[in-house]
Length: 353
Image 1 (tube, rainbow, N blue to C red):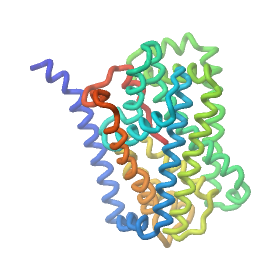
Image 2: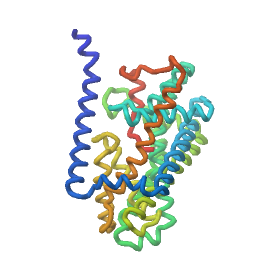
Image 3: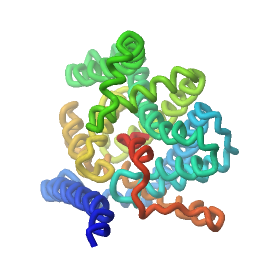
Image 4: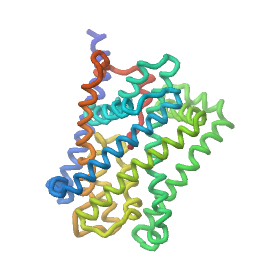
């Protein structure tokens, strides 16, 4: 009896944390609906405007292909090569499980487990570490794409006093994205022994430092894979910003361009990595509502409503991933109900496409 209790307690704890996050999301969304900032009926616009529905599905398909190509490029760090269609299949399965699995396991770990299971034993740790690296690349791609667009449109954005502080924030994030890894590598080279002692503990900080050190060493071993992954990440977020701009212009209606969107989109998306609600629900809605107000976009659809259409429009097609999952050959299912080994759990990180 005690053994059973100990075996189920981690699962019960994860479910309890997920329930708390769901409660936070429900409270935030309920508050937005009651305050009139979030109009759930606006979701119907995707079916009332065929061009928006087509654009939404095009962005999902393009983002899926870019995401699969990014993962395929990063698998090269482990010297693992898979056919493109197999990578797309597993990536769709990952998107499906990212939506339906509560807790911190996530679809990215699921697809990594499928590859690691069939790979030589010496490559499995690297394959699981790539989960963490892929999510870092998602963050880097988001910030880099926004920084480039902001730089191109810098003069016009800087001339607007409402956009100026947001454009400056995006620029600082871009500088940090470029200089941060280089600085980390320099520190690692000069203080490597001391950092190694910090990463041998069991505290959350030690685990995070351990993953960062391992990730930087792995990335340094294959810069060409890193560049490819970053380019594909930028493609994902370029598509996302284009769709968000189109929704803002149609639903607002607001006269905004890609430059204006690039100043608020990454800041709103980055709030979603805070682990206080499932998939950033509620948190992202509040963030975009405040960002729209900050740059003077009022009098039409709110930022929360536009973001809601964008988010649901991109989440719903992820459920199609159940079909490639069912198409996996019999006997290839993974024991998803069980707690993954410690090294696999350590691969988790905030998920930003």
